[in-house]
Length: 113
Length: 112
Image 1 (cartoon, rainbow over the protein chains, first blue to last red):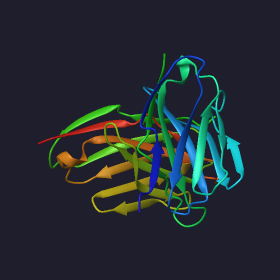
Image 2 (cartoon, one colour; image 1 turned 30 degrees about the vertical axis):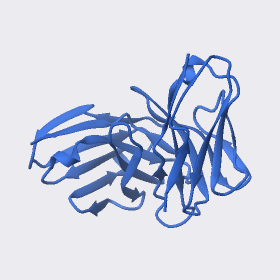
Image 3 (cartoon, one colour; image 1 turned 45 degrees about the horizontal axis):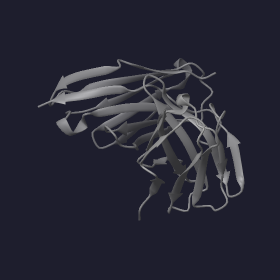
């Protein structure tokens, strides 16, 4: 049981490049989330999904797109990376019922130069 | 917009002490409040979740309380150990879809 995994762990991009971050969970959770963590800012919600095929905007969605084609996967895309998107990105998942406890992945450290 | 504040930003205590971490939030219309632990370079681990109708939750040496009307929560750690050293984050769910607003955390160091 791997829980929540994220790929890649580290990435350096040049301004204007694109990339996709992959999040996978094996707990059959309905809800999935993408957060970014910046020094002094805490974690902020980028996008979330309450089920396969559905996505919604969080607190800081600009510059990002997401897709949830399969229940176990949640992809975060950066179409044209900017230095302001340098951050640590965390994926999380939770069940729609029960404890609502969120399980987090180990994070992806992204640097945009 | 919901704002979550954690004071102090950092705290050092000798091993064995009992301690309290504080969390305050500006909008009391919440579904639940959660406490997490984050070790350096790692993801978050859920510690306790308090539903809006509850006053407290306990897990081992940890006890979290919630006073929704005053917008406050505390995390009590009994008999602290060096392994408790980490950053502790609180977060509130305002939407019912578990969309969390996080505080900036308290970095705890327990000195052996």
